[in-house]
Image 1 (tube, rainbow, N blue to C red):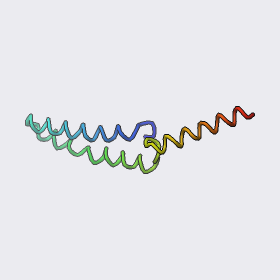
Image 2: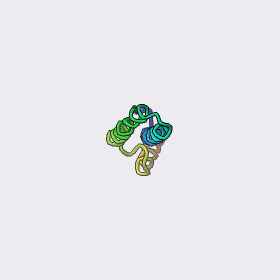
Image 3: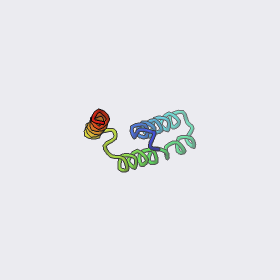
Image 4: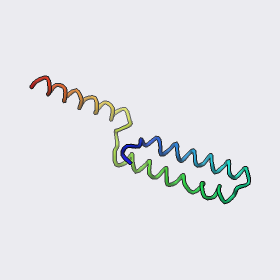
Length: 79
């Protein structure tokens, strides 16, 4: 799950809501109910991913990653 960005899980949740709506409007109620149960799972996985690895996708995390890379390069140059 670490290789998949958290935004992907949110997009899958929204996409499954849209797919459920399309199935409902086309009269396929069983498919709509089945696909309509997916969004909470996708959203929960996205939230879990954010809780476990905070800072990977936000601005502060990018700044911290850049600072770590700069420190690594400074160590390599100093050797």
